[in-house]
Length: 87
Image 1 (cartoon, one colour):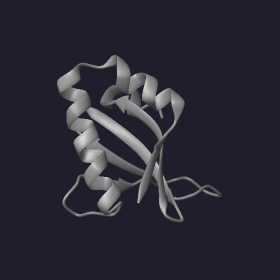
Image 2: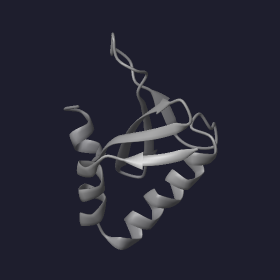
Image 3: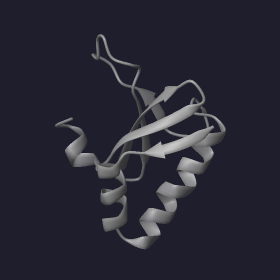
Image 4: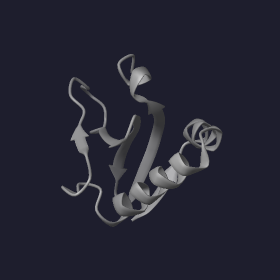
């Protein structure tokens, strides 16, 4: 599957330290192979009516929010754990 990252998520990713960027990128590569993998820390987000199913990928203290549409994974947000509680 192709992975598309929203502009704001890419800006956030570019700002964090290189080692963390590489870790998130590696997880996104695994996500591209299977967006519902049990090998990754993925959870479906609850309480979102009339919207596409959103999922959360956890990588350390960072969270990646995404949804799957046809043969593409669309990353809408990459954030710290703390910000995730306000999402």
